[in-house]
Every structure is written in C-alpha cells, then in structure tokens.
Image (cartoon, rainbow, N blue to C red):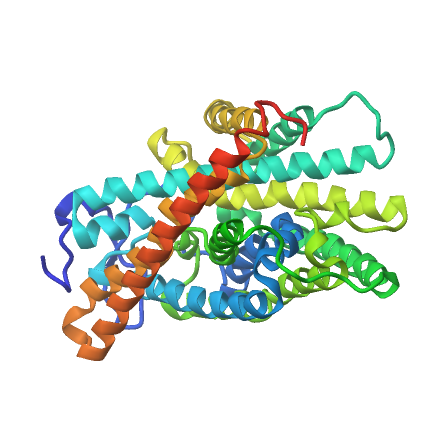
Length: 447
C-alpha cells in the first residue's frame, strides 16, 4: 500500500475537475447529487454547533454529571472536548489526501485501506447515523409530550403518538430541504431555538437551585453499578461531540477546505460548546444526584415558559436530524439521480418516496423502542468510537507514516489502543444496561 497515494485503487475515483487549492493542483472530486464547496467556514461552524447544542444537551446533567460527579464530570467534559478537536482535525487534514476530494467517510477509508474498509466503514457509519436519527425523533416526541402534559396530565395521548407526529414533521422538512448547504437560514433558526430552551432551562434551574436545600452530589448505586454507569457516562462524554460524518460536512465548505474546516472546528469547540457546558453544569448544581435525564421535566416555573422551551426543543430536533441524516440523503439522491431544485414535481415525488420511506422506518423503530438510549450506548461503542477515534488515528498514521517521527507514531498507536480498550469496555457496559432495562421496558412504552 502506498502511504501517499492510497491503497484503494480506481474504485474510489470520480470525475476529475479542478476545484482549486493552495498548490494549484487538480483535485479529483467524486460524483454527487448534492452541492459541495459552497459554504463559508462560519456556516459550517454553525452546522457543527447545531449538533452539539441539540435538545440532547437537556439530558447531559443526568447522563454525564450524575454518574461521574463534579470532579470527573467537569474534567472529563473538558478532556473530551480537547480530544474530539484533535481527532476531528486528523480527519479534516486528510480531506484532499492523495489528490482526491474525500467527500464521504467511506471514500477516505476505502482510499487508504481498500474495498473491505470502504464497506465496513459505510456499514458502521450507517448504523451510527441511523441510531442518532432515531434518537432525535424520540427526543422530539418526548419534547412534544412534555409540552402536552403541562396542560393535560391525564390526557389519552401517549409517547408513541408524539413520536409519530415528530417523524411526520421530520419527513416534511427532509422533503423541503434538498441538501446540507441549503439549510443556511435554518441554521440561524436552529441557533435561536437552542438559545430559547437553554436560556429558559438555565434561568429556571438557577431559581430552583437558589431556593433548594443542600443537594446530594454523591454518585448513586452499588459498587458494581457505579463501574458500569461510569463507563456509560464516559461514552456519552465523547458521543456529545462526535458524529462520524466529518468528511460529509467538510465537503460543503469552500476552499481552502482544510484551513476553513479547522476554523469551523475551533468555533464549534470553543464558542459553540459554551451553552452546552453551561446547561450541563447548572443542571447538576441545582438538583444534584436527583437530576433527571430531561432537564425540563425537573424545573419549576411558568407553564407558558416551559411549554415554549419544549416546543423549541421539538423544532430544533427536526433541524438537527436533517444534518445527521444528510449522508444517507446524499447516498440515496446520488443513487436515484435526484438533483436540482427541491420543488420540481419529479424531485418532490422522488424525495417523498425515498426520504419518506427512510424516515418512516426510523419513526417506527423510535416508537417501538423509545428506550433506545440503551442501544445508542451500544452504537457508540461499536461505531462512534471506532469511526471518530480509532479509525481517525490509524488512518492518519497510515497516510502520513513516512512523515511522522517515532514519537508521533507511538502517540497515534497509544490513541488507537486507548480508544480500543474504551470501546470494548463501553460495549460490555451497554450490553449489561440493555439486559437490565429489558426487564423493565416494553415495546411502544409510554416513558
């Protein structure tokens, strides 16, 4: 295998056209139905920030801080931020490796390793993003239900109905927005929605914390359960920042793609991460070890404010899902040659059939298994860690091995080993959690 030219052969070639780079070399770009190289680093930074400040942040006080406590929770979150920035920067720097524009994660893996890695990476990424998309539909459904019970606690509507509504709205949005670059204005809307539920939750949580008696910050559970919940919380630390789709996001950015992507990553993991930090820490401060896994269900305050926050969380989840579903949409649109304006009869019909079918299956799984958080922990162990950390370090090691000194090679191998062990531990913890919770939950549960 040629470290500088890749080992994937012609399988990963595409249309050769000059997109322009700092060395004025032609870069080969694969065929795609979606728009690429059109977005500023600032817009891409908001795409990344939308992901980490999604409605999932309302659960981090309970899923990260409660199992880890103050010291390990705060230090762990900061370390996870730094390590995520580093791992993502490795992938970003390989975007034009070997004179090819790697606009898909599987393309990059296939170019470096060969056909086998191409299909394994695609399968792992599909599973990862499918579970994230399903999680967003569940979160959106939970937010709708939380708003509903504020006005009618004994109403007949159950969580599966709200998940069905959420899936329908996600489908309408997916059909209307042709590709990731077309979000533009919606990224501003998403930021506003995030600020609404984060600020409302923040203010109401501070009010509760100031008026509350001394809190218990001890880590709950037996010694055995603490070990497994700590491993699960560590998985959530890294899951909060990583998606396994950085090349697909980087494909939309203007030249120079590496420099601009690094700017977007710095924006995401400095300024963009502050709202997530704030709501995670303040939620744990206010409620201690009794913090719920959905912060808005813990706060006291005006019904109208809490309803507004929940509705904002619902709509923000719809936009966030579109980001994380975009690799699948790109694959389907390219396969079925769905191009051009989003509102032509042909494109609308095709997207209703293709994207609608995909999201219908997502929604069915979400309604069937609304406790899918357990399975998302499993997905994080078998795909998020390998894609974002193990594969990132090893691909960079293989691609740049002739340019790395002994210490740099050792560093990357240590990263591969560390995240390999962590991935295995997370797998064991996730399987145990599923086994324990399967005794409690049932299909189409009203959680």
